[in-house]
Every structure is written in C-alpha cells, then in structure tokens.
Image 1 (tube, rainbow, N blue to C red):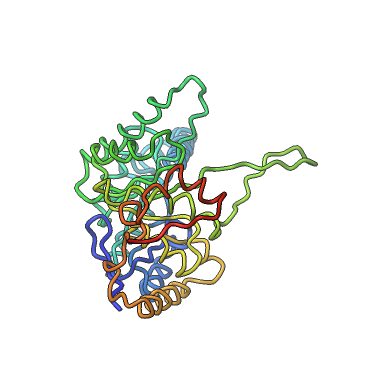
Image 2: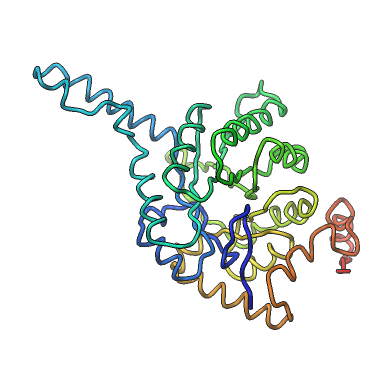
Length: 333
C-alpha cells in the first residue's frame, strides 16, 4: 500500500506526523520517530515569552556583575551574539536535519511582531523544512472586536511570509465566527497550510485550596468531530494543505481525517501513553484498512467523505442537526 502524501508541498512517506510536543526536545527521539514511520516531525514550540524572560535574566546578571572587577565588562558575550533561548532550539533543527531524512517543521509561538519575524528567519536559516506558527491568542480584552482578532492573525501571517521562503502552516483555533472566510484570508496572507485545531488553555479550579489549576489533559478520540467537520467543509474549497491535530489515538482517527480531506494527521498524546513505536502500528493498520477497502494509495480515498463529495452536502450544515435527531444518515456518491 502506498502511504505517501504531500503536506504544504513537502513529500511525506506517511500521513502520520508527530505534532509539537516535548518528545522532540531530544534528537534521539526524532530518530526513533523516523524509524517508527513518521512522515514528518513538528518540533516542540519555541515560546517568545520564555526567550524574553531568559534575556531579562541575562541582562540582570550582566548588570549585577559588570562592575565587580575591571575586567568583568568583557567576561560575558554581547546579548546580540548570545542568542539566549534560541541557540538550543536551532541546534536541534540542525542536528535533526543532519541525522534524519523526513521533514523537520519548526514551531513558533510568538507575541510581538518583531519576534515572529526574527525567530522565523532563524529557524529557516537553521534548516527547517517548514514553520508552523501557533498563534495562541485568547482575546480576553472585551473591547477587542472579532475583526480586530482576525486582523492580528492575518498581519502575523503576512509578516512571516514576507521574510521566509519555506512553507508556513498556521495552527488556528476553532472560535472564529466565519472559519471558512478566515481560511481564505490566511491563504491570501501567504499561508501554505492550516492545522486544525489548536486546543486553547482551559483552566480548572481547586475548590478546596481556591487555586487555579494548570494541569495537562491529553486529547482523546472523542475530540475529533469539530476538526473533522471543518476539514470536510474546507477540502476542495480553500487551496491550502490541511492538517488535523486533535484526538489522533489510532489509525481509525487518521483514516477519518484523510477521508474528510486532510493531507496529514498529527499526533502526540498517544505517543506519551503508548510510546513512539506506536506510529508503526498506526501505519500498519492504515495499510490493512486500505487493502480491505481496495484503495492502493492515500490519494485514492482522500476527501471521499468531504462536503463536496457526499451525495447530500447539506449533511455538513443545519440539515445534519435534524438528521441526527431523526436518525437519518447521509451516503456517499
């Protein structure tokens, strides 16, 4: 069975991609991901806030010690030469590119206009095959309009696109009032791919200690329905590569996303639970399903169950709500 696919112009040997997670902090793990059959690896995210915090610490130490001894002023390297917070990330990109053959996609989570541009350029120079920009922005300012939020996304994409030549994917949230139109705006701004969807930080409360909890909750297969819906709607309507990144626990979720129209399905949670080698199991099960269904390639069934290809496209809109309540089902052309 031919599991090859193409994601934002990059040829991949498998549609199973490792999403941004701490497992990719070690180059050895990236090697294991390739050996297990991953089509590509999205590196753990570089957060601009962490870089700025480290820069502030560096400047504090430099200020506190520079006058202790006359020679101290030349002891530390200049900040612009120090690359605080980014050097290790860029080294991982370089090391991975030297040791693996699958695409390495950098992940950037910025906060300032300058930061998005600066770090994206450094990632490209380090050898990244693409960049996933994770615009994790919660519009908590109640005076900010929906149009203002959309403009923020578009401006960031346009700025990054103007400064790098490698493919750019945008990891977006599911809360836009018009997701389809927003996808078109992102395409016009220079995006090559959309990653659906980002899981927003959702706090919990400790009712006994009256504290805010920041505990991590791994995704599960029940969460695929919202990205499945939007991938199925966007496929064939927006000229962008589509990636799914929620709830991928097994080959079953990967197949569903591909049927909807995704080019790849990204996973991380299940690798923490079952290990990196689980990628191989997923690939084998995808191939077995393809054999049973008489599909010889990913291209043969990608998008078969998208809105444009099912017999009744209304099944993806309001009519589907009625069918769910009445037990009706849609079929495939």
